[in-house]
Each structure stands twice: as C-alpha cells, then as structure tokens.
Length: 411
Image (cartoon, rainbow, N blue to C red; front, side):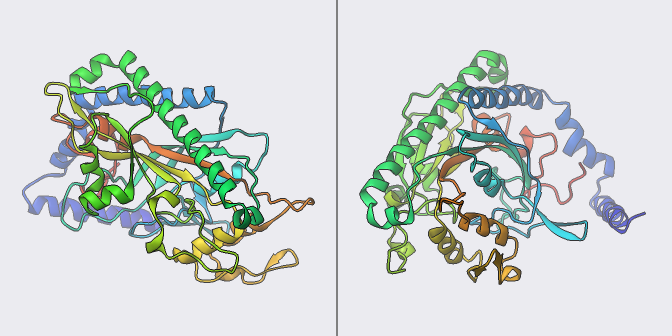
C-alpha cells in the first residue's frame, strides 16, 4: 500500500476512535453528515435548481458567441489570491512540481490572445484550502473545493503604453464604456438565469420557501468607498443591501487582486500611486451581491457576493508592478536574448510574464486586453436559497467541504 493510503487509513482510524470517545459511532457520523442529507427533500430540490441554473448560464454564454474552454486543474502558476489560505497543494508529475488551481484566471487571459475570439467561458474547478473561522463560526460562503463559471471577453482596444501615459482621457472613456458592456452582459445573464429557474423550478422554489425575482436592468450600483464610509469595513456589503429592494445589486471599485485594473497606476517617471490614495472610481472591478427572499414573509436576508470580476491590467509594465506591490513576487524578470536570466527566482510566474512581455514581428504584444468575471455555483445557490430549510453551505452540496464544518471529509 502506498504511504499516503496508509496515512489516510491511520487518520480515519484515529477519527473513529475520537468519535467513540465522544459517545458516537462511525455509523452515526456517516448517517448525520452524509446519508440523511443525500436522501433529503431539500437536496433534491436544490439539485433541480442547480441543474437549471448551470444550464441556463452556459446557454446564455453560448448564445452570446463565447467559446468553451477546457478545465485547468494543475499548473505551475495559480491565482495568488488576496486573502489568506492554509497553503497551496502541490503535485509531482514526471519529475516536475505543479500546483492545484485556485482559479483559472491566468489560463483565461492567455486563451483570449486569439484575435478571432469574442471570449471564453469555462465551468472551472477551484481548490482553495480556506482557513477555518477563527471564531468557530459558520460563515456560509467557503468551500475548499468548488466550481464557478468563469467568463473572459476580449476588449480589443489595443491601447499601448504611450496611450496609457499620454491619452488618459481617451483610455478612461474606453474603460467606462467597457465597464458598461461587461456589467450589462452579467446583468442579462442573471436575468436569463432567473427567468429559466422560475419557469422550470417553480415547485422546487416553493418547497424551499424562497422567492427568486427576475431583476430589472440596470441593477442598483454602489461604490465601495461610499458604502464603507457609511457602514464601516465589516459587513458593509450586507448593510448596503438594506438600501435596495432589488434582490441583486453591484458594489464596484474594490481594491483587491493584482490583475484587477487600477487606472492610472503608473506615471511616466516610474512613480506609483499609494494604495491609500486610490479611490473606488479608479478601480475597475465589480461584485454582484444577492439576497435570499423568504416566500412566506417577503423578508430579505443579508446580502452575499455571488460574482466578482474586473477589467484587467493589460500592459507588462503595470502588470509586473502590481504583482510586486501585491507581494506576489519580490523581483522583476530579467529578459535577455529569448531567455529569463533569473527564471529560478520567479516561481511559476516566469512563463506567464514572458508571454505578457512578448511581441510579434510587428512589435505588437500577444497578451490581450480583456474583462471578465466568475459566478460561484455553490455560493449562488446558498445565497439565493438559504432560509429555514438551508442554514449552511453544506446543505446545498453532496460532497461540499466546508472548512467550518467537519473535522474530516469522508467523500
């Protein structure tokens, strides 16, 4: 038996012994944590809604002319994330080390370099070893493995570094236009999804005692700076939801990931803006938040984020500076005669940064200017369906691994 299989067996044996000491049997744990849920009416109704939700989103994206991209679960590079995780799992294969993907963000960017593409979508897997709640609290939003439908569209603006520095009003005008385009796409996607679920899953929604409204376009919008000024840093998203009767709304301008566009960020003299001085209006990203609605009372539950996205950084110079400033790397690549002299110092980022830096025979960069986002499937289901029947995110999954629930995951 492989060493890792023996280790798993030992862990299970010790877990069974701990259950016995607490007065429970292994069978009790199996029934309470898995069997009862798998057989429940609640999970049946959720699964029916999930099927329509996923199918309707993918149907919409196909109708919009987007192409399907294959899943990437192992790579030498993955999303560094702006929040803490336990660690990034690594797998050795053919003498090399690969990491499991937190998201397919870099794969999406590079796939969009083909100028014939309008954009891509993928039902992507994600593995994030999230930390447990420090307060032993059910947060309801985290799973360590989950799926989201990722979307990325080409912008095709082709603004150069000279434009970045010298034509700021023109660039800002294009960015605002593209923000409207991508936010409208996601709004229409949510409308289509809610229409389909209401048509095909009326009885399932009723059984869960929740309402799914077809929202009006445009959704209400709130700037992060203004919301935080009103409500403070903690729970400002939930409290902002109390200002609107709409089940869905936007919060924009959240300074977050290194690839979410901040413009302008660099100046020609090489100086960079202080993070504390960057207003939400100069951060081109966005979240869709949603609220569950109790069918019996019409009460809205606190809002939670279901989709996040952004216009992306697209030029090498700001891309590498954002990566450095977000402390993803501590050194810049040194390019020389088709090679990276300090490739060993860049972790898995070397090939990606070389691709961003590369230009074709006409001096044009291969790396595309894009915009996109991802909608979490399990997170959306939990957010929209929670109530008396659904209390935590485990309740809407067959095999969901919630860091705030089980000490060990059997399946």
